[in-house]
Length: 369
Ligand SMILES: [Zn+2]
Image (tube, rainbow, N blue to C red):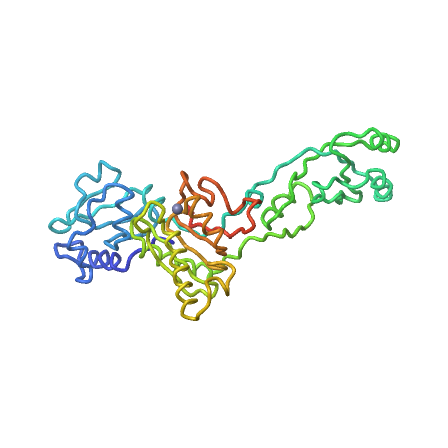
C-alpha cells in the first residue's frame, strides 16, 4: 500500500507555509502535531511510524520531504539535513533524500501468489545442433531426425531463416544426420534453446526470444489477482490485524465472502491463531448441527471447505497442515516465518505432491518501485 501524504500532515505543512513557519501551531485539526505525538524521529523506521500516525510527513517531490515533530536536535548527525525550531518543542526538519526515496516515497506492498518455482524461473538455455536448409529439403531431413524427446516438445522444430529454414537437429551431433548435411554441403551449428517449457505469458515472451516455443496451457494456472480479490483479502487482513494486535491474528471467510471468524492466539502452547480459527468454525458447526438435530459433518465433508484465510504471520507447519486438512481454498499472510513457516518460509506444504489438497498461497510483499 503506497504510503501517501496524510491529509493532516499536508494541512500542517500548508498552514506552516501560509504562516511562514511562524510561531503559531498550525491548523487546529492537526492536534496530534501540537501535542507532539510524533516522537523522536531518528531514522527511517521512526519516520515511518510518524508518517503512519499522520503527524506531518510531506512529499513535495523525491528527495525533498519535510517533517514536523517534537524532536530533532540530533537529526543532522543522523542524515537529516536540517532541524529548525518552529514552535516551542516543535521542530521542522528535512529528511535526507536517500531515506525519502526508499522508505517513504517509493515503497509499496503488493499481494502476490506464491507459485512453484517453475512458474517464476528465468530462461535456462541448452546447446542444440541446428542447420539452415532449403525448404525443399526440410521434409526429408525431419523424417531422418524423428521427433524431439518428450521433455523438449515445447520447442518448435523449425523457424524461418530468410528464404530457408533453420531446423533443430539433435542435442549432440549424430553421424547419419551430419552425413546427410555433408552430402548437400550444409554445415551444422550450435544454437541455444530454452531447456524448460514456459508456463506463463511472461516466460513465453522471454523464452521465445532465444528460440520459438509452442504455446502450452498448464493444468495449473496462476490466480488472477483482480482488484476485487485484492480488496477482499485486504479487508480480511485488517480484521486479522485488529483481532490479533501485536501478537498476530487470523480471519476466515466462507466461499461467499461471509466472515466466519477473526481471532488471535489463545492460551495454550498450540493455540495459534489458525488453530483457534479452525476450532471456532468447528464449534459453530457443531452448535448449528445440534440446533438442527443433525450429527456433526453430516452435511459437509470438510470443515473449512473453500474458505479464505488471512493471517498476519505465516502459519507454522502444524497450522499449515491443519488448514490444508480443513480444505481451505486460499491463504494469504503478511510476515514470513523462516523458522517454522509451512507455506514457503521453511517448507512449502502447498506444493507437496503427496498431499491431496493444495490451497493457493498469497503473500503481501514489499516492493521498491
Ligand atoms: Zn502454528
